[in-house]
Image (cartoon, rainbow, N blue to C red):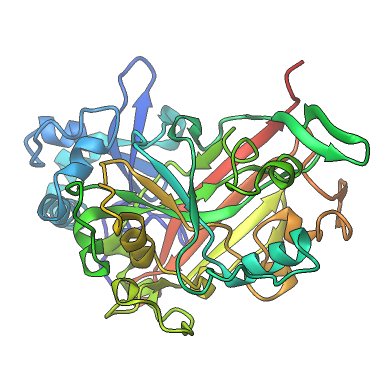
Amino acid sequence: MMETWVDVPEGSGFGIENLPYGVFSRRGESPRVGVAIGDQVLDLAGLAAAGLLADRRWFAAGTLNAFMSAGRPAWEATRDRLTVLLTDSEHRGRVEPHLAPPGEVELHLPFEVADYVDFYSSRDHATNVGRIFRPDAEALPPNWLHLPIGYHGRSGTVVPSGTPIVRPRGQRRTEDGPVFGPSVKLDIEAEVGFVVGVPSEPGRPVPTTGFRDHVFGFVLVNDWSARDIQAWEYQPLGPFLGKSFATSVSPWVVPLAALESARTAPPAQDPQPLPYLRCDEPWGLDLTLEVELNGHVVSRPPFATMYWTAPQQLAHATVNGAALRTGDLMASGTVSGPERDQRGSLIELTWDGREPLELPDGRRAYLEDGDTVRIRATASGPGGAPIGFGEVTGTVLPALH
């Protein structure tokens, strides 16, 4: 294991093996690109201005998009250089002034979102929701085992962690017919997403083998969901207003290079996918998520159980010729495991409210105004070093009158 001269708290998750990218600002200064190391933020724009890091106007920007679009050679060269700067004590005197303690920084949305796609890739989650929504039919739709199902969300409602979530309003079904009002089944979806760096040409599908050349890194996602609005609107065209009001993402983008040790074989796929969806290497990721509601852990979903992998999602999203753009966000869909305490949404944890959670601050079927949700994730890095994703948080505010 490498060692850094930076004081990294034990179990931080942001050690030298990780080096996730984000966008931060200090009071009175413009947002710029930084890297998390321990509980501090390393100012890459400051390093570049001091001549310590190669830069093509990537790091003084308020988003990661320019750097993400630079491609894999630039990503690898920057990571290698940062590793040298943070492990060779010879550089400490010049690098240390560019470290900002946590109390001095504000974290922002790390990238400008181009398009947003949300998949439905957990077999356990899809089976549970199918049984809840369609109790008299097959839990999985007939196409589910053949392709990664997904829907297009709204990029303009992707918000950074910590942004308050206003309870959405819409139509929902009652015994007396549809009514309009605030959602009474506001839910979470604990997810992991990947971010596209290098765009692709229209008409040219990206194969599973092209994943590393286009994808910059991974983030945590909470795809907030209004289940009552969703249940009334989703047939026949799928989710719309029940999903499009807010999607929260974590402030740090974990690069692919930091996750090599976390790669694992995904669940066996039967029937065998069509050729364009086949992967020659394992791209499951052994991540453990933790879902916390008002300070109480309610679930620990295992990402390694996801049936469809990220390269398969990317290949399917582009197989019709749709082009990738820098900043495209593609989320996994709810991460759930086979056990009850591994379910990544309240609709599963409470079985649509019929089995409420018993928490120290009261029972919960769905989210109430004032509730705060935190989702964290950790992977195993080289030598067992923890690779942290930080957290994605949000507090529910009352619906607007």
